[in-house]
Image (tube, rainbow, N blue to C red):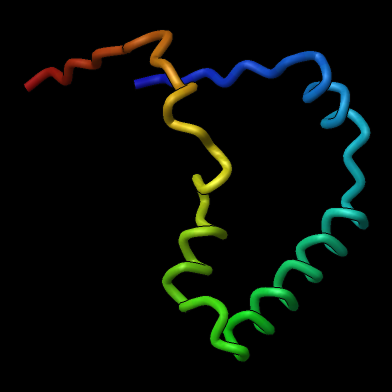
Length: 75
């Protein structure tokens, strides 16, 4: 299965001005907030893990399969 993601113009423009240093700072701040939430008992480790998971930012209701590729192997 092949999945293509489409970006609107605003998203594409924001990706073109991506700053690695800014992203590293944002990630570090996020980790510190998560650690504080865990220490204070505001969130469980499982909840934080789900929020920070690989696909947590994707909305499945907006996803669609645009192409399928079937491969056959010779025996």
